[in-house]
Length: 417
Image 1 (spheres, rainbow, N blue to C red):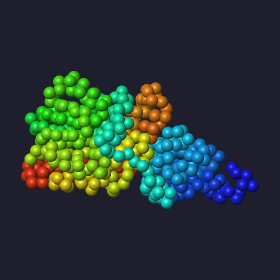
Image 2: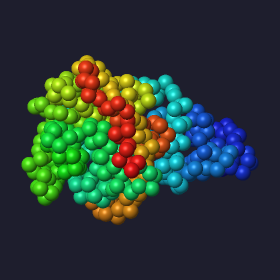
Image 3: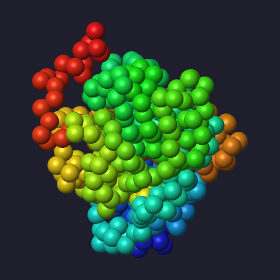
């Protein structure tokens, strides 16, 4: 508590027991920030002994801030600086990190200031030229296959799974997702498929092994391509799947189906029309396609900290923006499905697996890296749970084709059986 001779720097406030307390200027700043966020159910402890927040109800978590510098960063730019301070260890959390981030996300929707608006406007974000795309992908996907093996499913599927029931395991849900994609594409034996952004190759191999199609899969992550090729050889699918280490902009040939799962987020909105033209040239007369992408309810930049520290160049679209890919070539949208809660559950599994592997991750990359990925995975789960992020699957075909399903029965008949 501050002494009486400092009373000109304090004001009355209410503690968790309802008793009046006196706050320093630092405490007042934090208290003002919480009020502007709608007073989320969190408790803040400052380095000087001040405690603010959560005067009503049960607190979700407790945050400890180590110094004034970190406090000022949070007040000026909370969306970005929470991750930075958490990473540096000057902001520590006691309690459920996912629930904390969820209530803070809701609160940040209410918080605005001229300074924050200027920062958002002036912030430099990564671009998605051919050269930049390689750098952006390398920064995330080439961390090493051994790292991703620690917490993904056995097939290394790094996109939203599909849970026929909430109790479905992660591994089974990833297979169910791949089956769902294949059913939506109505794949038939002998057809040809081009996949843009294939990760470690799980979907391409699944399509070939289970639906009898031939696949050309494009990706610019060297680590992922080497793994995918080795797996194709080991499973005897080398003649059915060709993994091409190249940019999607260099796709050529003619195919019965186009599929992209988890790549559109990395394309950049300035390149959507070009992507649509590429799909148009690649698809046969009666071709059809599916795009699966993280999305937003309205156009906005990706969380600045995620874009800087985790996914450089990433920019999830709103559904309207996503459809710009298909409008110029004149594709007809056949089906749109939102799997938002499926991604929240996917991330819950990933986060739990990650936490169980913390000792190994620390050995591989150090404690700072551990904290970066902890807040990333926790924040992503919270973002899908709160609706900050969506997950769209869009199925499309030529506008003039009448070879389309009469009902959606073909999608879920197998699943129901």
